[in-house]
Length: 188
Image 1 (spheres, one colour):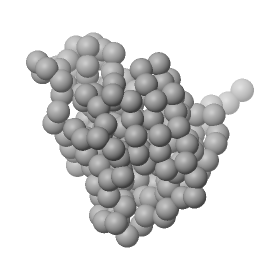
Image 2 (spheres, helix red, strand yellow):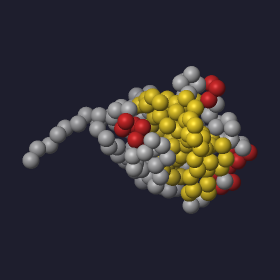
Image 3 (cartoon, one colour):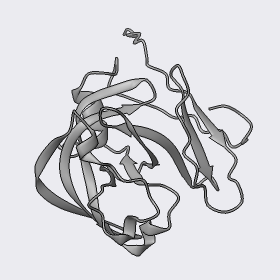
Image 4 (tube, helix red, strand yellow):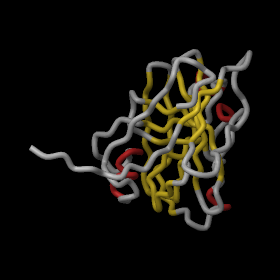
């Protein structure tokens, strides 16, 4: 038997204590290979991703139970009024799609247009990533503290978030891990 050593791209995560009330601030990515996240009662972890050229920042829920990546668009109805919205007219790398899709979660439904644009998380940049641009969400999402969802599950489809990272070959190996400490003062 043998062991193959692979140089991993490390994106350290730092858990932040949840302030009273919902988190409404954008958590900016730090220099280096750090991706900050916000902890919501050890149930949800949020972080900042960027889409487009120049980058437009969004707070997303990193969701291990889904595989899709979506953010609100400027076409979104009143259900997105409290969230940042992606404006494709401000991105030179945007490519419109020709299909619509929807997702149903236990907490509600999201309708979106499928498109492509450059995507960044920490120092990792993925060109031409597939992204859902939400045009309608159920009222549940209207009051959430995140703008969109970045699904961490992967089942290999053109609409999946993690597959974009794999297909772009921006990771030295096709795996990732998170360390999320229970102590809010401890870095992850």
